[in-house]
Image 1 (cartoon, rainbow, N blue to C red):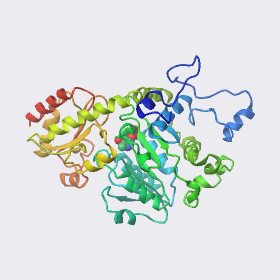
Image 2 (cartoon, helix red, strand yellow):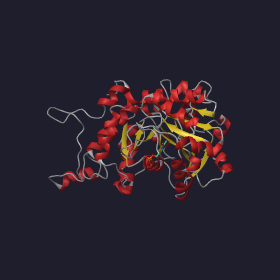
Image 3 (cartoon, protein in one colour):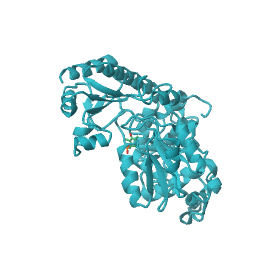
Image 4 (cartoon, protein in one colour):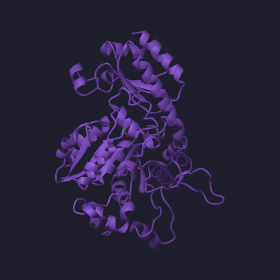
Length: 427
Ligand SMILES: *Cc1c(COP(=O)(O)O)cnc(C)c1O
């Protein structure tokens, strides 16, 4: 599949049936797998042979779908997780552990910010947050001798900042550590971070990849390019024997392309069990088969809505990197030449009350704590996810009271604009 374009990988990646086998990826709805001898099963447990024995660790349906996502991202190996949160947790915890330090962009998903700043801190992993638009000197100053990775999002949810992936990758590599990129909003259809130097890519497949608001899920892809052995002292988990797996050294036994995902499966999936069900993986795959057809429409609708909002007298500002005047337009031209995503954020004049009136009058766009599916939805953080904050606190958090995040779906763009226009008229 490596030689094919992204569209072909979306449709046919990850699974090539043999004669008489199902054309669609089969749902292997089985917790366990049968063996004739204990010796054969023992080889699997010792990672001497590859195969299935228990679906908490690996399941054929999930593996086909993970292989497709890995091909789409141009990586060497991939795995599915139960959610995007699990994907980011695993990706970080597979590299860093108690006593280590990481560098993260400030402009990331709220759930990931919580994971990093609260839960990972409790586990002994410290973080220095840097503004995605920081200077090279500020980025450099964030590194410590015990820094183990750098983390950021291609297009941040909800801030819609665009990360200079190449610049962050160069800084990470200069310090001998990998760059982990959450590519949820862009999807590999619009940006493949590995091509710009990212080493590990994560996804909340709950968003565009599924695309229909049907299944919560996550994925991790290894580029297969980061040489753990070249920085062996920094990554003992990958470069020294794992006593919980008969003294296997992952980077030696599975090489540069296999070590990361094998360790992540053998240790973290074994011990934490954040698996995706084969049913969910099957549904995710149906979404992937049309991702390359859906993303351009999401972007077309996002662009049309952003342009309409920008020209409207009741709108104070619009954030969308597809707008020529946007702060991130130049970075978007480099990293997202075919479009970014369908999520637009904007502020209505008149603050919290105006935002509330606007949203109440929308007919097509439902109010949801969700983004990136076929149906247009919107959210006013000040009256929902961030409602405990004062207006001053909201400004400090980058979500002023009047801010509305609108995720443009796959409907007709004239219908969406007409709906937004009548709701703005109600203010
Ligand atoms: C939604 C989201 C997550 C978390 O994913 P879940 O599937 O909800 O656990 C992580 N990163 C980004 C960018 C997201 O949008």
